Image (cartoon, rainbow, N blue to C red; front, side, top):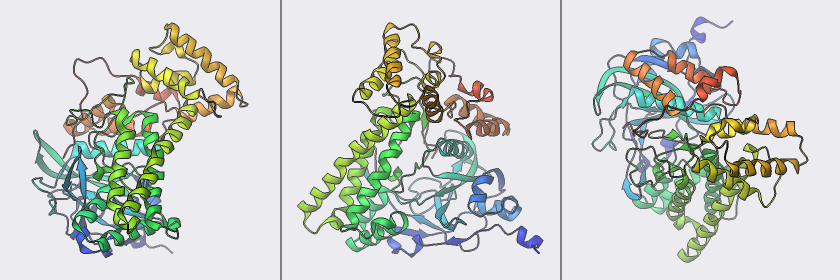
Length: 491
């Protein structure tokens, strides 16, 4: 018979394989305790999938883990060291306000990182206070869970705990700690760090670890380190394509924010595009538009080139041969990305086969959307339900011509009109985390302690392809404003 004590066991099943790497890659450290921890939100479905007991996690001792006041059994907290190109400039970095508690071994047999974000200063904090504000942590929770529901690989948010302390940013803000779950926190910047501050053997050890953890099937290849590069490329290409297909703008695609696992990581100044425009930028610090929506595929390729540079000593003992192997692998990224993007765009238009003219059909639509400032999500949603008249393109002779071409194209495929419609329903979300909706939820939570707006938003975003009447209100675009929407890193 199960005892009450067993029912209240949290279910932590932690291992610490990263801590068994050479000590150059981390600093062992415990989180700084906080004054008055309070659980704000707990992701119960995620907890269950991790083998964790939600009731125990909501207890006083469970909340203390989320706030950093208690170390769960089996944890070995550490701050990871890494480097990165930040807006093109290379620098030494590391977890300045985060600690890896360990790796949860799940009932499904997977291994995932459990990280506290906002848990205090580390040796890599530079001038930062190591803390996080409640608003940005709730923002990461909302958007990372929305990305998961959209079918986009992502780190996920297990919990947000308030600290009972204030932190100083532009103004005093309530502090919080986010518990983040990731396939791992290995970044392109981790390999750059090893290549610049470690030995070749340190780099090899890291690469072997990455292969074993993320790409075990590639370990037996003729050139295992070339296979590592190829596998990372193979995961980044569909990831970036999926971003583009829903209008997601990461905002800060530094090399330290590219996870080799192929998950979206670090939701700082990210946002979703309303009116279609490749030049769209939301980040307050991206004044040159380096990370604009239309630049994201190119930046991903640039970041992968930096990974290749770090791996050169492992690719071949002859440097010229190593460069040649790296260049050949990198050349495949653009083709892979374009293939994933075209497949996704065809699906958004209800097209399930390939014709040479498809790319022109897609590009013509996007050009007209840009000209008429048509909402990205709602345009495809309207096409899904044969309501082209509801779009900003309605009344345009060029759009009328495009509609005829599109209908003719769909008519040339074997699939029925109903099958085409169902493909579009599965490919075009009804709702995304609209920026004004996210801001409204954060304002209610942070300024008024009202979490109902956020809970309602999370519920709607949990099934973005449902296309229900209840979602209608969340499809509306923001009212026109004289000021452009801006996002901030929240560090």
